[in-house]
Image (cartoon, rainbow, N blue to C red; front, side, top):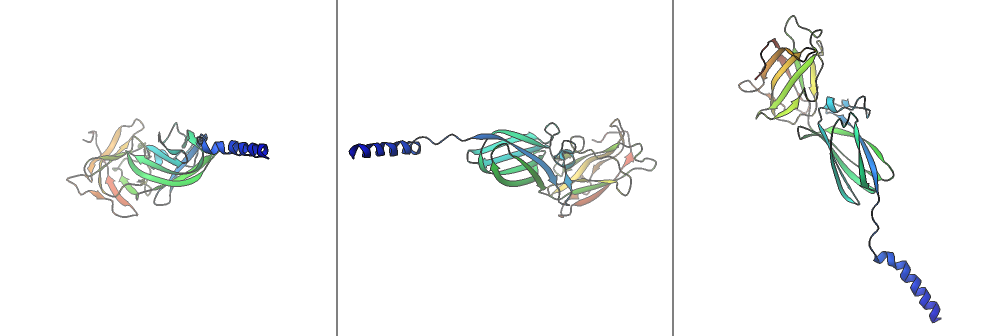
Length: 247
């Protein structure tokens, strides 16, 4: 009886040893996030493919990803285009139930975001839609008489807030093609509410040379453009022939 009891106790001790030792090391895997962007007017930018990643049209420079799970917090910042792929694969991410925050930034301003949750196991992939945090701003433009879209390749512009910090660059992200009336306008999605003006709005030829432009539109001493409504603001720039660069 004593020998049987001792053997049974020994077996119980062996079974109990894992509970007394260190916790098992977490497992890790790769996880892929794809993204597209949805503006305040319900327009989608991107379709999860390399053909249409959506970054340039949404004017997003970087995507910041924060994953919180059993192994702690994983952070990563990637260029939005990321080699023209509309997403990124994160390596060595702890497995288990997790939540995430994905933010789209333009000039380090957060302009799109989405939260989500899921099970990270195997080699998971998640399609995400980042929604605009701000309303849109639209800009209409009128070319001077004698000039039309047959000789204008596109529209370049630079949008400044009233203290001069640039929050949009056409030549960095969005480069709208010239469109004849009544479609002679373009949309800048998700602009933080504030007071803005354009340092310049210019019609350029195929060489990128300005053939007509307006300088200092909406900036002091002119009346500024004020973004005040959820539906956004529409402004119109009247372009004139010029060979002098805007200051």
